[in-house]
Image (cartoon, rainbow, N blue to C red):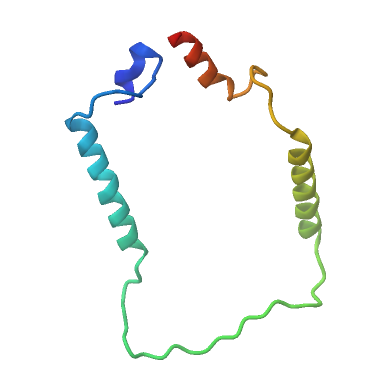
Length: 106
């Protein structure tokens, strides 16, 4: 389907629904079902009680170098994203691709 759009700039709008597309959509639905089945546990035991496990974070554990490094990276990444602001059209980034397709069709 995607390769069929190569002659019109890979614009897939208003393309006819054919047998390949219907089979592809059916495979997507089947794949979601298979993935959901794969997430189920292997053995479903009813009535069995599981041992009670209590997990708690150590409140007074020291932070190691890896923790501090991660905090610095996340702080810098969040700060850079906040400063980025909206991107103007035509600045050479990925947002330019749909604009080129629109100009090509006009």
